[in-house]
Image (tube, rainbow, N blue to C red):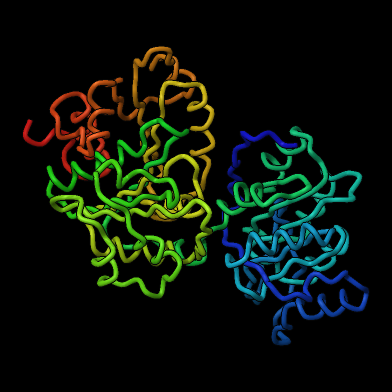
Length: 450
């Protein structure tokens, strides 16, 4: 199997686009010659007026001929050679693209025939299974898809060199080996395509800042909680703090308040979200700080709708100067959507090799059009016994930390246990939090009150 520490490689000619699927039970039927002719006929672009000439489909990698009569492109089409893979893709990708887009159960060569006879959708998912030369098969795909297409691939090869070849230099955005699993699809496909439809345009309003940790226990919750408290209480800005972990989050615990179900309700029923709903659902964090935090039963599945995050974030930004979210380190679907929609990302590390490894993976996650491309990197617990040195980490990563918080075992943990902000105490921790506030656009980076 492919290694767990894979990263998403950016392909400039293949920008990310959203995914959706068709849930009709008849779409996974085996492909017959009669059905193939029907599909090809239905998908063929409508003939333009007599004076317009329709050129042949062009390669995504090779030079493309201009179209005199552009044809509207669908969002997605997928191909899987086996029924099991097709069903799993339908189940996991459900809700991310229009219901007119489907996954066909066909072999690779039939999929090429279908693609050659249609205007290429924005996203194509291809199955390379059964091809003796999968590298050549990828080149064949390039001959039938148009520029600007995101190509996702699945197949039988589990060779890491094959993966690197097709994703780094051949125009395939991501590749997954069979047998497919729900976790692999959610981790490697969805981050590339989630929320693209409704959220590729910059939006006005307050700033959404999302804090994520490279692993559990690095202090992402501590930093996001204290940063939100500092901005609201010391800089007097209307601020919302949100816990992106719906089952195991500890934001409410850090502030000594009780979680409620307001956040879960907003994600399960986005049509109910308005300013009155937000006012009634938020918790009082003191001063100008409001909090949204849930603590659902571990056995309860959240009926999360992908578009809910976009609508909810728009409503929050219209109300608050700053919205801070703790995405944690597990990066569940809601947390990933928060990271995608953020105007600014903050990544918290501890002095460990695991943090260095996971940093690259976090940096590779795609972001929306309004997101600052420069991610703020924070080293927490610098100088902790047994930890890596700051100089070694910066040399290994090839970048410098934007903020460094020393190991403060007597101050920060105790404040958290008492439900009090450590940023209220003058010292190194407060100074760094003030610097972070300045880095995200709140304040001048100098601790308020000295």
